[in-house]
Image (cartoon, rainbow, N blue to C red):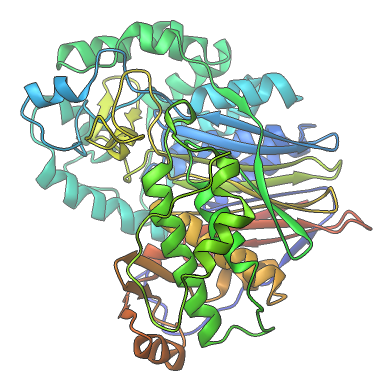
Amino acid sequence: MDYLYHPYPSQRMTVFAKNGVVATSQPLAAQAGLEVLKKGGNAIDAAIAAAACLTVVEPTSNGIGGDAFALVWTDGKLYGLNASGYAPKAISIEALKERGYTEMPKYGFAPVTVPGAPAAWAALSKRFGRLPLVETLAPAIAYAENGYPVSPVLGKYWAAAFRTYKEALRGPEFAAWFATFAPGGRAPKIGEVWASPDHAATLRSIAETEAESFYRGELAEKIAAFSKQYGGFLAADDLAEYEPEWVEPISVSYRGYEVWEIPPNGQGIVALMAINIMNGFDVPSVPDVETHHRQIEAMKLAFADGKAYIADCRYMNCSPDELLSESFAAMRRAQIGEEALTPEPGTPPKGGTVYLAAADGEGNMVSYIQSNYMGFGSGLVVPGTGIALHNRGHNFAFDEGHPNGLAPRKRPYHTIIPGFLTKGGAPVGPFGVMGGFMQPQGHLQVIMNTIDFDLNPQAALDAPRWQWMEGKTVLVEPHFPRHIAEALARKGHDIRLALDSGLFGRGQIIWRDPDTGVLAAGTEPRTDGAVAAW
């Protein structure tokens, strides 16, 4: 039986609930969040439970050794958490050049930055959670210890990752990845049960110590020793001195709503810049050729600026306010004509992944995202722990003069971005679309689907997507309207049809009715997505 063969169209409906909703890319993780809600936890506890569970039930996209960001609505206010890690103190471009590198590598220890996900769980739990971590992480520990059957899309990407890593990973430092994720010399098949006692032990240690063991205890010692054994730059003091950062979310107004993102070093500002550009155009109630053309052009311009200016905030040579100013948006908007352009950065005025959403009946709402970046990440697993280290440092520029140039204790340009929508100071809800550089593009499309085209949360996710790649090249999904694709090609866009929807991101949405408190949720049809509701 082929679990990836679907000859007939299927349809999901928006899920409604009153007491709580958890929407994730994995049914087991969504149910883990719901289980914690029913035990008396709030939306923050549910999000932590789902996030920890996803490191086990979707290891192809995230892991214990990855980064995280969160937007939390509670008690009438939106809070932002940046739990992305910085580069080790000992690393530098010069140090990599001495080892023969001419660019940031994908695999091995060079792109490994300090993981922030365990710190995110602890920080969220301590500040807003109702249950201890030993309870919120219990479902994840159980799945790691007892195993679970591999779901269809997970199995597909697991097999693809194994094929890639089998060719790319050479050296004894990668042995633990194969022992952990390819037992028996292959990836687990769809429907096959996979377990990882090492994951369970690590998650239990994190839960019992509120992540202290990961940064200043037994797990930190194992990570540092593994790094030292193979000439890595990550050291014990890099872990010990790390703390996640609470930040003020940034926003733009769009047709009566406020769209919120985490400030740089994340690329959420790219989505906001594109939305700001679109704000000046009249948009019809049904998406037409001109709207698609302007969306693509706005996104190209926003990305050009993002790649030129986004970095760790301490190193940026312009501020988020300058990039989000109306005068800058108007200048960029004026550059959009009838034909596709090749984007170049503008001059502002001076002045990757799993995504989940959770909400409870009390009004708490969480937009959460975590990632190992490129699938399983660096290809490194700390022996005996199940900790797959991410390769987020690959996003650093290999240029000391660039704002995003690699430097010690610096955070890289980050692709993962949670989103949140409010109206008149009241929460509408969390939304997000994971998937590397697709994420800002997914945010723009989902927000316009919701606000401009009046689509329900499930339809807003179901709608066919496009993805700008580079230059004038735009990838479209297999079910993207042919007549619009042909018209875009006549405008100079290099339209290419994808045979697979896996490149177009995976999202979740939860909207809250301000009058009734009823929660309406949609989940991603492009993956094993599920909404668990109560």
